[in-house]
Image (cartoon, rainbow, N blue to C red):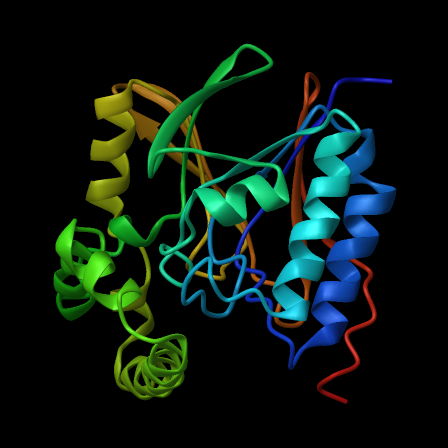
Length: 248
């Protein structure tokens, strides 16, 4: 059997969508367990308000990933725009290794840049302004110092505001800026980039430093189980035939 690495992103897990978490648990138990490594490229949760939110649902997710890690599969996590408050407590519970926002890994001989991808959507000026604040040192500390109930209300209001804002934005603004994609790949000297965030699964061909390159975009899990499989023979981006029943 060939060595294999899996990538997932934008699951947006919540207690209100047990169909998605059930699909995740099945994937971890049946497919990911056969891999060398699994990378979670952000937005694992619909919202993460702090590691002290030890709800039964959050613990069930942590237990599922820890069970995978305990089999010897390396599990890596990059923060997304919905779960940038994940800290070491939850990472330890889930068996995660926390990675920087941008990191280059060697995938069977191909240096590959990994990120969530929201930093590439630079045409959304308002979001980038918030991102700089949210990823700074003082704002997370201030938010995490608030009572859990207050943070829960802030998260609920934030999701509502986000939906309203997205309804007003064009699809181009919410997508990556092509020039910034190339710039990031040139900076890291790679010809392959893997990211999520935009919910537009695809493999894009481009040119970086005069060389053929590719940008692989992971899809969301709202109504598809988007999974990227990488092995020495290449890459396969697919949607799992999961039974999403919550929206029926």
